[in-house]
Image 1 (cartoon, chains in turn red, cyan):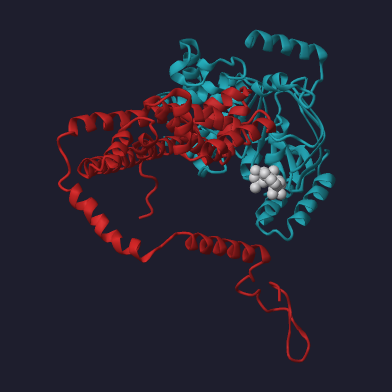
Image 2 (cartoon, rainbow over the protein chains, first blue to last red):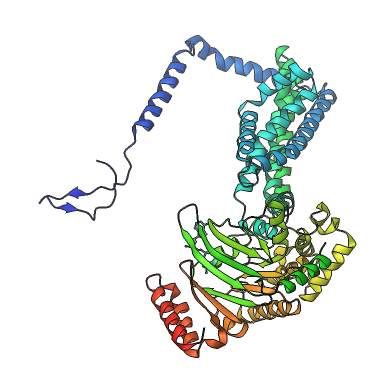
Length: 282
Length: 292
Ligand SMILES: Nc1ncnc2c1ncn2[C@@H]1O[C@H](COP(=O)(O)OP(=O)(O)OP(=O)(O)O)[C@@H](O)[C@H]1O
Ligand SMILES: [Mg+2]
């Protein structure tokens, strides 16, 4: 029985006052999706090689890592701090470049500011590609093209930021109020002037919020880029694990934790400052 | 550009004689969702004339005012503003025409995030499309001085460096009027400029708008909801209903009863079921009562 139809009462007349059924019956599409997902999960689980020995030895091995990790090594802290600093710098430079570049791309991608629908499609696709390829994959690509080190890391973070910030900027631009934009159009301003005077200022608070969030995300991302050789603290982490120096690895993990938490905290505070905390509902 | 050209244009028009400042023929607009907001509007407004546009909610007033400068692209019809064929204008000519038409729209028509002075300076973008006019701090001192004079005229010079979102509703509308001055407009389109204001602030803004229109011999089309304002300010009243022109007459030619009828019709606009009949009555009475 489909939704919102009429039912026949016992005497055969049609009861049109009945309300639509509470729950929509799932369609074939939904059913097939669930079956496919379940099938994949079962297939994956069966290929996991979950032998009893492996499961039994896991706690002991984890304990081995933890007991050798504590106390964390302090001898290499100055070196590690330098690598951490490099990580933070990579994140800042990459995010700054990414945010600056995502602004024009977002203006080309947003439906209401794009010069042509083809440009809109092209810019949107570019953003999708940048966002959909995982950052470690970008890092490997850039390590191949510019070599090992922080430049590859910066480029990775830049691309990752453009993919993310560009999409959010474009969406924000598309939902802006008509009022200020029409006010500028009605003065006879050029499209460029309308963007500079109305679109960017009205979207600015949201842009800064998104940018700070990107910075936070980049610090987290930058910490692992070294795993594929793209500079920063991840390089040290990789080496420490390969040499089974778990105490150094533990130091690095703690440093990453502290820096990421600090970055989140700082960007939270800055966002609040910049947005006045929003309208209170109390 | 600017004053000199404007004067030359004015002389041309004077020589040409009777050209209307605003001339609309068969204007129609259909929104993408199929709503027919305008259905064949004919309207002429002479230079220096002030027209009050009345009509119920959803009668098409805002659509008409926006369609005049193609902020909304009309689906059909002809528009001539200050001698320029607006429909045929290319992007550059369209910007020139828009530059000559100042707008004071309902409440959100300033850029909240920048200063009051920047908002006024934006009025010059139509004639001086320089990035220096994007923000007050980049503008030339001549431009800043002119913008300050405009703010002075509307009594808001002390607020020049405030952010626009820190103004009251009445002050915001006065900033929009200052922007019209900065534009050196010849035509002003106002869409319910006092709808969001209390009666006193509303009067102040209306007084200011009408004074400025008179001082600069501007042509004004102003939509209003308050009949008493229409009565005290308009030379001529045009009423829209369902996207059609329903009534077009001198305010003096309409009898008290007509105006009262219009008032009643206006008050009835909240009831979606029967506003048409009442305005229809008014037209009959206007037709029998007055010479126009
Ligand atoms: N963006 C839009 N998309 C679709 N329909 C619209 C849009 N804007 C307005 N309309 C419709 O067009 C008609 C005319 O609207 P308009 O805003 O011009 O009326 P108005 O006379 O200005 O009303 P009000 O007095 O409430 O401001 C209405 O039926 C409205 O629903
Ligand atoms: Mg309106």
